[in-house]
Image (cartoon, rainbow, N blue to C red; front, side, top):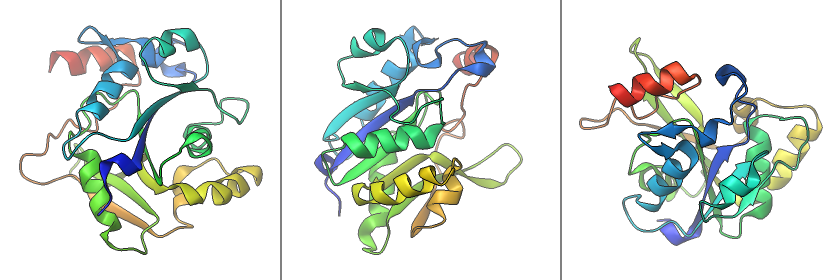
Length: 207
């Protein structure tokens, strides 16, 4: 079983925020706390013990993110290359055997996320554990930005992105990926609701 201290948690806050009118999404408030800080605090309070390290992937307003108290690293790939650029930055900087990625725009992600994804590695062949959730239409869909992965996958990810790859699932399909579904009794159905617009953010606050 993976010990929590073997995991580095990475907040993905490096996007353009294009659906928020170009606002820096991670700095928008959710119940009075910036989304990225809210995510950091949620990782700090994960069930099963303290995660070893925490860091943030951001590409602008770096001093504002640094004020949250965790190391901040911009993409090593240029041109806002998407979540995989954040994955790569995290894998390059990670000093623990495992990296856990969470986006900044999903403030209610499960408090046992790390614990349940880590359990998938009881199968020693697993290289990536990815969350999945039941959506409003009743279908279970992967949540590919919620991943726990082995740090030795960096070389594979570099090769994939250098070849022009940008889609997370195309990369994870190349590896032994376990999908962990969060649809048990007691699981919050809003846990993986992401907030792409200010209207969605305010709606989630008010629910």
